[in-house]
Amino acid sequence: MKTKPILLTILISFILISTVFGDSPLTSTEFSSAYATEHIIIKASKTNGILTDELMNYLAIDNNPISIKVSIINKLGWDTHGKNNSSIFLELLKSKKSYSTEEVFLKNGTGDELLCMAYLKAMDNYFKVDDAIRYSGFAITKNPKSFTYQIITALINAQKVIYSDRCQVYKLTNEVRNSATLNKDMKEESISIIFDYMNKYKHNCLE
Image (cartoon, rainbow, N blue to C red; front, side, top):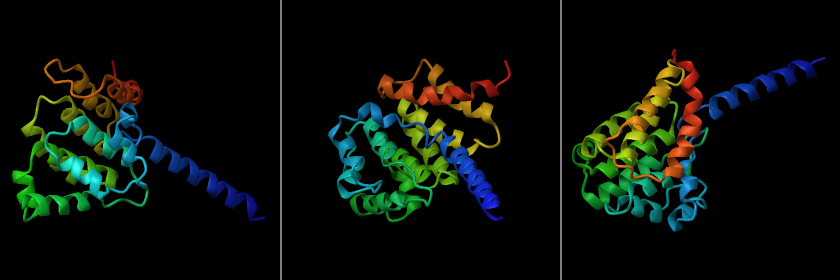
């Protein structure tokens, strides 16, 4: 007698979970696959989503390409139970760069450091991205012409409005795509992966 209600509950739960976790700018844009042959991305694929010392050190080196840095974070992915990779990264930066507090880091961190922190925070808990938005805001002032900076910032902001304004979800990233002034410091394949997903939101906007 109780079998049908239990099965119905399981089915509804599965549908809800699929909708939440499968419909998200941060979790559905796996652009790191465009960098799959990079040695450091291969390393990132083998850590079970944990930010290791080797990966942290790569993120902290100023001259490493920002597109690969964010691809590392993208490859580490997300978890329904949350992550703490951003906290791990902050502790490394405090020890290496003498950022005594998070506020000192916000004011004095490099653009790459701030953007990586923003993306890590967003992927740690994609239901709460206010802190990530704050970090990306600081980051983008330091490198406003970078396509990578702009698109990661747009994805984080799109995540914020995913359940309130789906047209805005599309517009945030589309504005980056249409900007003719940005430095395309990300592979075209990565960009295509992002917009193959983001284009799905276009129908939410009135013509």
